[in-house]
Length: 351
Image 1 (cartoon, rainbow, N blue to C red):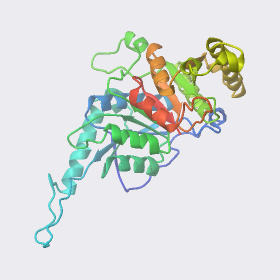
Image 2: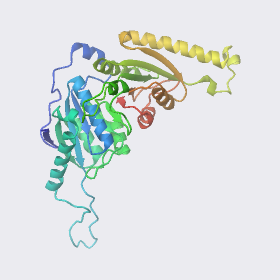
Image 3: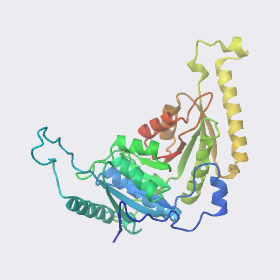
Image 4: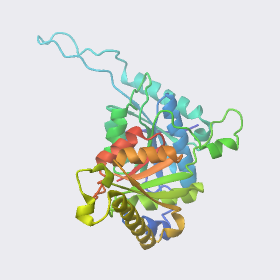
């Protein structure tokens, strides 16, 4: 049976497992990332929510983290009281609070029991009532969660709280990394699915091909250590991609006159210089042995990242949301948001 939790009760410890190792601390230094110890997974009965829960279970198992499954029950809307003050406050679909909470607790228990990979971890079931995005953020803060996994779209009769707008608010406001799962996201890579699973069990999510975009800023490189840590746990590969503004997109510039070379030659030189800078930064961070590919792309940042991920079968994008770059500004929050909206694979946003 899943453990039960209540909002407003005793706050869980922020370090439920063993402390971070010195190696993990060194890798995480300055990145805002530590391997997760408490993972929050908001849930409803939608299919995409179930897929998100499978991913949450996979990360909890890989990092030996404690998992909390949250179900938010929205209170029914309150109608205005008549101006003459007659009558009581009226609500639509009103249920006593105890009944509403009891239904929500039964719902989250059913959700957990329906996913074997989740149930076998004995996650803590948590029920809160209120505004969904606000309650998710409060739970992250109060429970000391250092990672959240949520679907970007989903609905259930009781909660209706995994709508894109809610997920987006949580992704942009949460103090911890957020793994976003879109509808249609597979629960396993083709590699994993090919191995076969016992009947009645969903395949476990295992991100093997991981892409880290950078605009060459200090902050954007902060996504690299988390990606490497994830790759180590899932036996994956990490590609580092810099997206630059394409000189060919500016036909008004006479590159021959300005730099003595053609636009194509300028593009080639930019790619070569950027690849050298990526190599130097990766070596400086001590991660050269764990980064498998250094790539350079040209075009609009978010669109280029999404297209490259799709073409290369990327299974996880790890992106910093606060980077700055003089050329592409590729990892600004607005770009990270667009990548979350449009990427076909899960996206882990690092603040």
